[in-house]
Image (cartoon, rainbow, N blue to C red; front, side, top):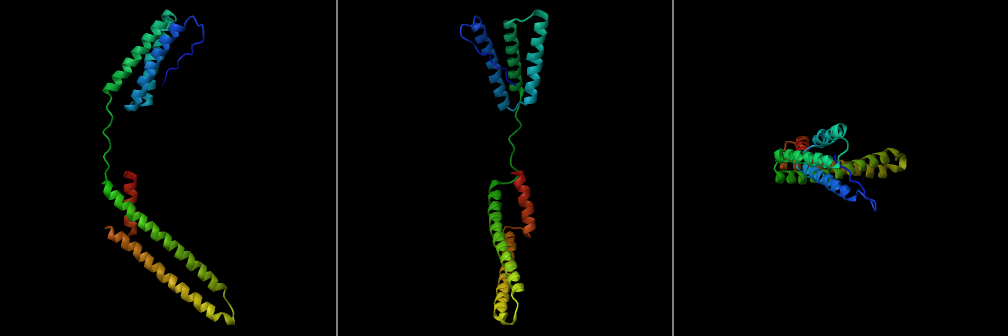
Length: 194
């Protein structure tokens, strides 16, 4: 989209001409930056550059040869055209969120609470799994006491797991949803909107 500037070597007899040429190129480049910020697409800018600079310069060289002043006029004309596009271009209105931001923050708090409860539940489920494995490996006539202790621990952990599950459902209900699934659906939809 940009026009490259030329480097000026020491004692170049064309130094003044190159400086003027670079100034014209930099004007175009600054106008491109403004166009991008204002929302004009890169594709549109490239099209203008192709039609108003590249094609016109080639046509000018074909018909009149290389005329540096003509090239600068072509760049200025393209810059003026791009400025007109910028003035006419209207950014689409800033999107208005379809969800109240306070409502979203409240939903995030509920989700964080559910995630903590879920983590606790996962730990309890791992504990139950580990205890059941220990129980299955505890065999023998003299291991009755140990087996009974493990069975009690499993029972307590399973009760704890049920309580945690009920707490998760209660958290969703307190937030105004029928269950965890309906909350997560609304949360995911809202996350996409945000």
